[in-house]
Length: 122
Image 1: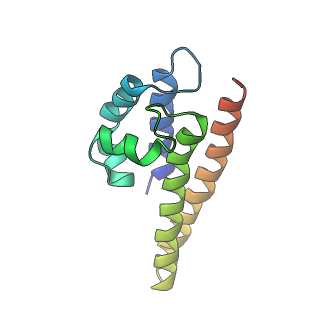
Image 2: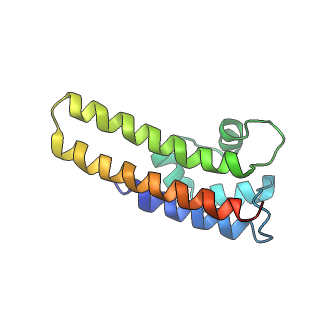
């Protein structure tokens, strides 16, 4: 619970690390974001090191996280939350299902907002 709020904290750290407003995070900035949000990232994604973080999200293996790769972070969290909610529904835990689906809907809206913010730079 609280995944949407935690994602906003990660998003703020990403925006702060991208002080040039280029929409791209280099390795140093990625490490800063990871170290600042290490516990939250572990809670949401079970990723323990910044090297693993880069390995998972740097799809083109260029050492940078572009706009799409940054959005991928939050899309993966949303998908994992949605899968967990579905499992809760399957075992008849409807209140927890409802609460997690509320988080999913908030994450979906936040992802749209994040995309809009990044696309303004292009």
